[in-house]
Amino acid sequence: MSIGYFFNQSTKFLWYSAHYIISFKYSTPIKIDKTNPPSFYGKMPSGKQMFFEMIKLLNEERKLINSKFYKIPKTQLKDLLSAAKGSFDFFLDLPKIDKRRASGKFSEVKAKKDLPKYYLRNFHYQTDGYLSEKSARLYEFQVETLFTGCAATMRRFSMIPLIKYLNSNKTNIKLLDIGTGTGEIIESYKLNFKDTDITCSDLSEEYLNVAKQKLKKFKDLKYVNCKGEELPFEGNSYDIITSTYMFHEIPTEIRKRVFSEVSRVLKKDGIFVLTDSLQIDDNPKLNPLLEFFPYSTHEPFYPKYIRENLKEVAKNYGLEMYYNKNAYLSKSMAFRKL
Ligand SMILES: C[S@@+](CC[C@H](N)C(=O)[O-])C[C@H]1O[C@@H](n2cnc3c(N)ncnc32)[C@H](O)[C@@H]1O
Image 1 (cartoon, protein in one colour):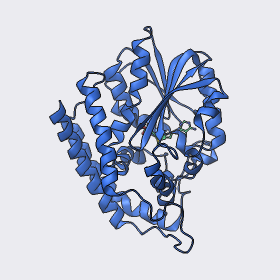
Image 2: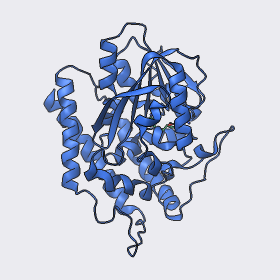
Image 3: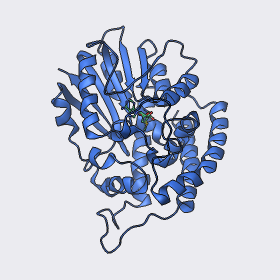
C-alpha cells in the first residue's frame, strides 16, 4: 500500500503544483504597500518548510491506511480523464479570474432565486461564484491546485473522529453534511461507513446537482438545498453533522446561527465534525500564509474566521469541543452536544 500511496500522492502533488506555479506566474502580481507592509510581508514559510508539513500529513495518512483505520477511493481511469479535462478548463478560466482579481471585482454573479447578500459574490474570484454548473465542475480542480494535491487528504482527516464515534456507537446512524459542495468527501464516507444514512445539503442548487451526478452510484444518498443557518430538519434528528470548508466562507453572525442550528438538529451526545482552514497560532510557522490568503483572493470572511475562538462560540450553543487536530493547512475539530 505504501508504495502505491506515495506514487499516487506524488503524481497528484506534481500535477497540481505545476498548475499552481503556472497560475501564480501568469497572474497579475499582488500589490503590496512596502512603505506600510502587512504583517506577513517577508515572513512567508519557505518551500522546504511547506514540503515538510505536507510530507507529515501524507505520512500520517499512509499509517492510517496501513493500519486499516480507513480506506481511500481507488484512482480510476475516469479520474485521469477528468484531471485532463479539468486542466483544460482551469487554464481557459484563469484569465477571467485574473481579470477579476486585478480589478477587485467580486459581484459578477446571477442568482435564479433570493439568496443572502453575503453569498452573492465571486468567492476566490471564481467565475459565477457558487451559482453555476460550470463553476461546480471546475471547483475541485481549483481546490486541489490551491492545496497542491492535498485537499482530499486534508478532508479525509474528518474521518478520524467520525470512525471513533461510529466504532463506539449503535447502528442506524444518521449523518447530515452542511455545505457539501460537489461532494468530494462523501465518497470516502460511503466507502468507510456504507450503512450510515447520509443527507447532503448546500445553499447552491448547482453544486448539489453536480454532487448528485458524481455520487450517483450511491442510491441511498439524500440531497437538500438549504441554508446551514436555517436547517429544514426536526430537532434532535441527527447523530452526526459534518461540515468541510464552509465555515471560513460565512460571516461571524451566520457562523453563530449555524452552530445554533447544528445544536438544535443534533441528538443529545451526537457529534459535529468541522473541518476547515487552520486558524492563527494552530501552527505559528504558517501564520503568515493564513494572513496572506485573503490578500491573494476574495475571501472576505476569512480574516475573522482565523481569529475566532470556535471552542468558546460552540460552547455557547451547548457544543463541547473534545477533539482538535491539525492536518497540514486544515484542521478537524469535533464537538459533542451536551
Ligand atoms: C468552499 S465550499 C466547500 C465545499 C465542500 N464541502 C468541500 O469540502 O469542498 C463551501 C460550500 O459551502 C456552501 N455554502 C456557503 N454558505 C452556505 C450556507 N450559508 N449554507 C449552506 N451552504 C453554504 C457553498 O455553496 C459551497 O458549496
